[in-house]
Structures are given as C-alpha cells and as structure tokens.
Length: 193
Image 1: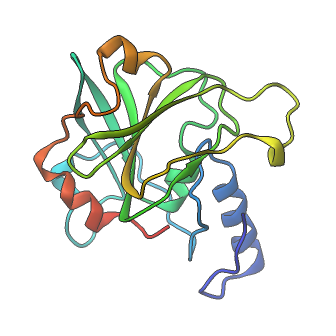
Image 2: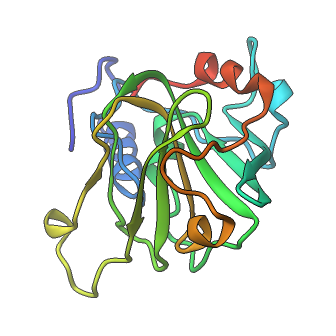
C-alpha cells in the first residue's frame, strides 16, 4: 500500500523508500508517514534503546515457553517492512519482535518468505492474545493475491518465530512470553506506522 509521503523528497529517494517498504515479509496495516533510516549494522542491547541518538534496532533475550529465544526488535517502518523477507530459514533460538508506539490492528503477509512462521500478537505484558501459523506463499502467486494475517485486537507487539516452535515450547493463546523489564522503552523508540 503506498501513500504520499509527508515530507517532500527527491523522486528517486521516494521511489526507493516505497520499494523498500513493500519488500518485507511482514507489512503494517497502514503505510509509513515518512521513510525510515535503515537499522545500523550489529545489534544493540535493549538498554541502549531509550534516549536521543540511540539505535533503531535492539536484540535481547525473550522467555518463550520452556526455552529462550533471541529477539531482534524491529522499531522502524523499513525494518518492520523487511521482516523475515529474503531469509531461507529461522533458527529455533531466534525471533523477530515488531514494536509499535501505539496499539492498532496489525496485518502481515509472507512476501519473499521461504519458510513458514508462527506469528504471535502480544499484549504489552507479553500475554499471547492470538497465535497463527503463516505458510510461505506458493510459487507464482501474485503479490495482490498473497493472504494477509490480520490480528483481531489492537497491539503494540507482534512476535514471529519458526513455524511449530510455539507448540514445541508450550506457548499458546493465554500464555505469557517473558519480555525484559525495559521493553517499555522500545515503545518510545518505535517509529509510528
């Protein structure tokens, strides 16, 4: 979904930003009001997320049922748009945490994704409100025909893990994913969608 950007930009930069936003495995239900800077190389600790001049990406442990996964927090529209796209597989010990500053209904798709994923829509305290498995798209399916996986409750946190990991770890609707205490700082660092 494209929308006119709120800040005037040279047409090449605007086109590049639109392509980058559409290239993701996951997609926000609403377009970004402005293009985002790409996340810096390397991961930051969650303690580095709050405050001016801080990274737009964080990496931290998340308690996931009977195990722990390393979650990469996606804080910008561009990072959330890329999501899992272009990766062949997700390891059992990794996750993507989509972080938004305000609650809203969130919608995702599997454009460019080669492996199935479990998607968990989380309350701010980590309670699993919804859990869905998203299969990779069939070859040749047009972008407009890709299924959308839309949550039914407004959330600020959405977690993606390898398909089947939720069941294997004993995570289901009503369970609680154990987030670090400073995860609230991520809401302040997240770009609006």
